[in-house]
Image 1: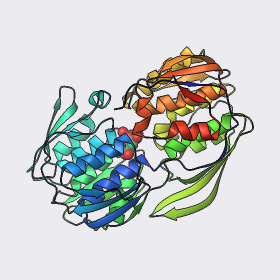
Image 2 (image 1 turned 90 degrees about the vertical axis):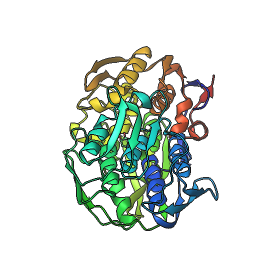
Image 3 (image 1 turned 180 degrees about the vertical axis):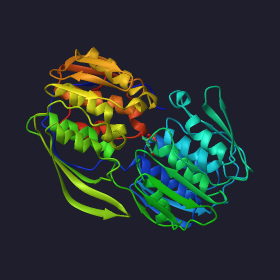
Image 4 (image 1 turned 30 degrees about the vertical axis):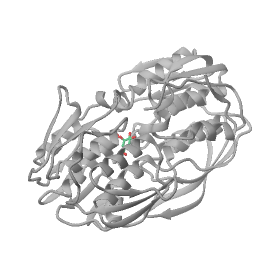
Length: 436
Ligand code: S3P
């Protein structure tokens, strides 16, 4: 992780122009993993040059996968085949990335060798029992720290068997860990979800030629096939676009075009929530690329009002709650968030981080176990801590745009995990953020 960094963000704008945010984090992790396990050479375009996905690329390089970087955002991956990974020289460091660690746990459970997965302080406090339990039921041998926390020791050489599993939590990471273990398992692996989650793993497995049946909430595959190299074009990350979507909605006079954003419906719950609040967002130039839906998003300022966020939207906007808290604080009336207790186990406890930060800016927030009630109106000035959480940091940078005075955001270095270049892109489109 980079050195500590603090920001100060002030009222500015309007937010105007055209921009493209970096590549999707979820898709970038999966592209490296499947390309690494495929037979042949895959070209990846639009790869996220963020710390999380660089850690995943480094993990595969440490297991003998040759990965070239012809230019920023491109990778040429020389796949080693499903059984071609080599024993890494030491522990694999997943950094801040829950996706990296949980998906790797599934994939490594089927290898012939042992591996240790480690992470930073935030990742070391995140629950891994949700993947360890189903993977053990498939035959894996994984040791964790008391309470199910990293580091994880994943023993290889196990005979994996298929599993039909209905996870207790709505989690694409859990689903994906099981599917990746299922590639190495005898028989059928099936995941049934009460709330469908992002389906990138299943789509990408199909693109790499693995037979997989899926529909929202259900995915099924069998072990024993092969992955064939294919080229992957990664869409711009909706979760990074979200900060600009809310910024342009909030600042009077804004009119912003975000290019080629991934609008997979399992990711765009925020659009539905913001439209219910009165936002003016149009999708232009809809098209498909590599089986994923993309569109340009045009956002014009519109006054927002509070809503009860429907629980049915929660899984489809799970990463967007920090910025929704800010939209709610700037909106007229109250917004209620519920059914979102998963936010407590993200890169930080995002209910607590956002409630504490907004309260420090004079916003009335009452925190609940599974959400919060936010009384919108005015956002004051003050200092908040991002708690090393990238999305909390960027959300409060947006809050500064509409606050009555300066918002100081402490501990922003982790923005580089998902959105390198946010600072310049934001200031170039009308924000006023400075490093302090
Ligand atoms: C992700 C799934 C989500 C999300 C995370 C990325 C993925 O986590 O919050 O940022 O790439 O599968 P959960 O599966 O824990 O909900």
